[in-house]
Amino acid sequence: MLTSENRFLTTHAGSLPRPTRLAELHGRRSRGETVDRHELERAVEDATAQVIAAQLAAGIDVGNDGEQARESFVTYVQHRMTGFGGTGRRTEKRDLLDHPDFMELTRNRRGQVSLMAAPAAIADVVYRTTAEVDAECALVAEAPFAETFMTAASPGIVASVLENRHYGSMQEYLRAVGLALAVEYRFIVEHGLLLQIDAPDLALERHQGFADRPLAAFLEWAESVVDTLNGALAGIDPGRVRLHLCWGNYEGPHTHDVGLDDILPVVYGANVGALVVSMANPRHAHEFASFARRPLPDDMVLVAGVIDTTTNYVEHPEVVADRLVRISHAVGDPRRVIAGTDCGFDTSAGIGDIAPSVVWAKLRSLRAGADLATSRLYPPD
Image (cartoon, rainbow, N blue to C red; front, top):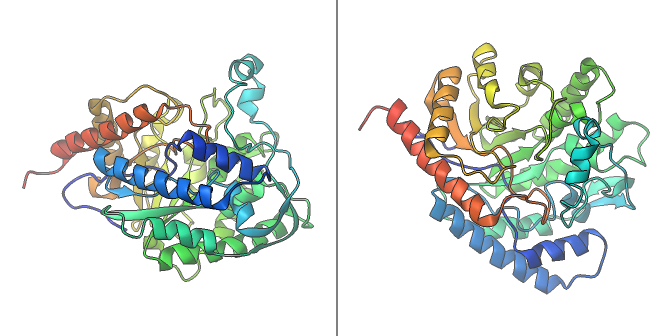
């Protein structure tokens, strides 16, 4: 995994704005409607080229394809695996249920792909074909980033979002999903890309799937997810993997979010070389101090979210720099900190609440703030 001895590198958490037409095509495909395969492929290729160029122009060091080839960060697996069909049902987030007036205010904020009514597991889940991930990797094979990453869903978020209607227990379902995803994980790493595991389940599920259960039950679930993930990553160098966790990439009260202090001991058990953590939003900006109380393992790097992905405010570079300085002091070494974003900017096609021009302004500010922090924490050449 690329790090630097003399400056803050910049990256982001995955998804970037999709063109409207591409979002529509993904939405139709996700609903089982007929989509012209060649039109979709052309739209993905064009959009990928555009987001690569835009990331480079914004000063991103470690970039990706912006997930242009996927309908969402998790339900894309239905096109690569067997066993999914019909429509499942997902429990609403606890904090939103507490504030029905807020839900009414935001009820028209819908993307093309529903994560609340995703397909369900109705038969054996097996990785069917690597054709789509192969095409994805090919589109970034020549991308001139300092390092290129590719995202993939965690076993826990797939098992949480795509309801189990087939397996005898959640643990059995989780194991099957882990075995299937292992194929994708290895494929990405073998193609020379940095693998990012998207695991919002390690924080989000506390106030969604486990909202009415004790914290201990959630932590037990999280431990089983990490065990499953480690099994799926067997044989892969941890230094080629980073793990993204968050509390849900949505504007909302977040009053039932689990504390970072509570989940870090579990997350530290993952065989990965970096954590990508939301740290810019108003609910979790104070938790940089968690890394002083619960130090990063010696072999881990922190990709710190210093840009909020749920607001159209563009962070001032001074704000970004201040955050990076505080986080670096908590971690104890700025060389183990990379500047990033809280989450993706379009986690399912068309759902992004941030105007595309603002997204690129935020990433430019990320670069400028990282440079300011570099001038404050790194000695001059």
